[in-house]
Length: 131
Length: 190
Image (cartoon, rainbow over all chains, first blue to last red; front, side, top):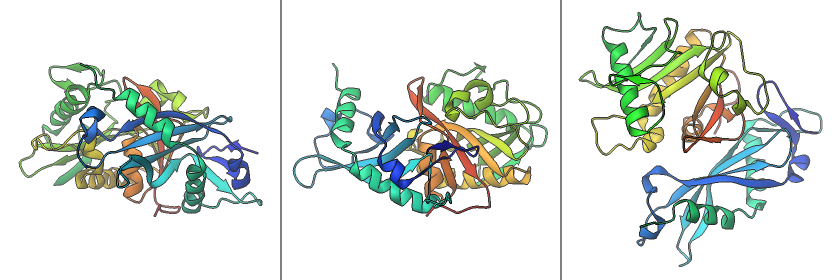
């Protein structure tokens, strides 16, 4: 069961959360690198954020930061830091796990999502270089 | 950096007009927000006699940061303009809940400071802590804020128990969201 509480948290168990599908909402670059990606030809730090939402009601919102890892020769989007969300995970006895433990479990959810390609495509389109 | 707070009448002389001109420079000129402005000053219907301001100034008296606090027992920005950011919950109306808005921490005298990068600066973190302490002094136990999503990152890095009220929405080209900030009691974020 998923409930939207008066304090704004969406409460559900981790098992329930694992069954929820998420879809991409939007992504962006951190402001210092808001120029065209085609101009990023040297090794430098490129970072940004990505936002996803659940297909459930009440809506679950998850966002996290990403960085571009080019150490392999091919650019790869990697999660940086912990996700941010409106979720409070509860145990089977309906008790809050708390924000820290909820965030740790959300990391596992985010890492199970195949988000990199969709985020990369959105970024490429959003910041496409035009003459 | 000096931080002062108070209503329009409670602030030091000329600081209120400095705040409105600073807000114009940051939100209208640099961020391009569509806000009511006149003669280089940004003020809206929520700048009332009971509105509380928190302002940071440098050694020369220039404003380098500001925030606005409103009780949710009277009209406020989120409740009037952005209730849909609450994911279906009714807007808060309680003396325990105050709204934080028009938060900015950009030193306009330093060209290297980007408006977008303000949310990671030491000024921003200090101003945020002062704003939360000020709200608590007025009886707030929770804050709600409508902000760019970078503010959530700042809040978490500063160790506050802050969480979004729902998904962000793009407004005038910027992803904006509503964020809860728990004051005092409760677990701090690592």
